[in-house]
Image (tube, helix red, strand yellow):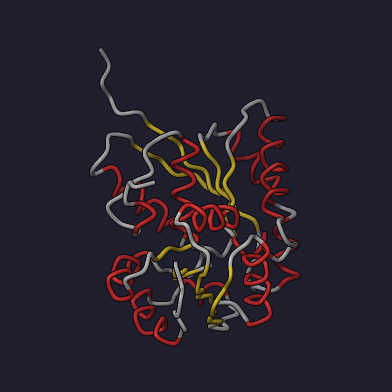
Length: 253
């Protein structure tokens, strides 16, 4: 009788300058491996993007279908589109369109694959946590942050307050110290807030701070990366749980 743990291939469609999703998502899955039997490998395909502007994001999004095709060749078990703002800058509710388009690529390639977008995952994560009012930290310039806020509000949440750190260079975003969030969050008005989104950007590191922020605020705290990982686990049909990553990954949901 074969009792070897089941292995899953995690595919990610990643902006070429993103270095965070390939560290934070594997870190959560690796932490999960310490408490649950399943094992994971990680596979990426890249789409060009250096500056986080609406123009570059739109050009990059057009490359996502090619990336989905390439990852489909590797027969990954789930595929994540690892850029929240690229989806949100394409217009309200665009994650639904993107998920269908990417899935169709995998169907046409003969290996239908569940698709997660970090934008859709954040919305689903907030719903799962029962959020009605949220506060959001982003590294984006204010106009892009306003787009993200509008997108989240269009999905039925009230964004009570938001911080735009206004860092245009994507590698500089990745270089931020997640522990700075323990001071940054204090600039937010958390009155009546149900959930704090410590990073609405998958390039801005926040994983190390999430559990500490929950202790500091007494609120559920999440991020686009945590929500993406939660959604990937759900799509794989495995227990959505890890010893790091806050309330969403506590095993309650």
